[in-house]
Length: 434
Image (cartoon, helix red, strand yellow):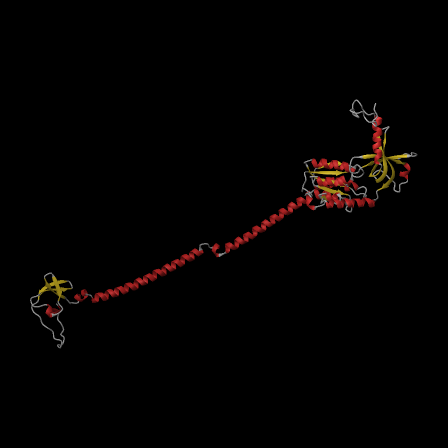
């Protein structure tokens, strides 16, 4: 059997199924590798202390608060008894020691020579540094906050088992809305196992499509008790979740980092129940109030419109829609009558004037003259007729045509006689006119 420390012959592998290493060689090699690590400072949370009376060695389990990982630690029992602050399970500590590999059992242990409790001041300083880091990354930005549904179908609740926070949330929520549904996940809410259990429950509820909001609830406590809710891993998981998350950690003065990264911060678990579950009685009263206000507004609108219609109907044009037409009809009739009277007056005037003209024309016309006894004497010469205007126009023997009012008389001229101008006019006789 070849020792691992001796070089393998040329052409032959250092380790193979035909040339395996013995357990002792591997154990020695691992011990040498671990020994090269030297002394280191390690921070963690004590989850187990085994300090037997009279024993010179004390055994501890140091756990990472943010991960499911732990280390076995050994130390001189006097180191624990001499600690300025009594150490107990759940205490955060910083230890200094060197790793040892026990070849006989194949186990590794951290042998510490110094142990320092992490004080409140240091814890608060670390929380402030982490808060500044997450704020610089924008994880506190209000624009990242998701809205809380008005009436979620199912509420996820992560809280301690049989805790006052669980009782408060369930009692208040069901009192406000009896039909509310919960998916409760009981986890540790302080100590070294709190963060891994909360992360697991958060991931499980976030995957459930029925869960529309998740509540992280815990009662009040000391800074050390609330440390899990200022853990960086948990804060980043809250930001990465797709479901809105409500942080209801501690009381009003308590302010873990989870309050800043959550979508809604509630002062207490009771306040969280009030803010995510509507009050059925209040909502019903609001519905009645809104319905009454709507009915009153509708009645007021109807009354206003009724008054407006009444005012419109009271106007003359709507109260008596035919009145204007009647007025126009009466005006048209009046104008037509006036026009008829005017036309009649014009016709009467013109008729009278025409009659007067006709009478004047008749009076001066030949027919009227003939009717008064005058006659028109014409000399007939063949087919020609010439009116006799002087004695010379009718020499004796001329054939004459004498026209009177009712006809004509044929005669012949027997002679002529001139009338002198100095002779007084004599009254003509009817025979002379004829």
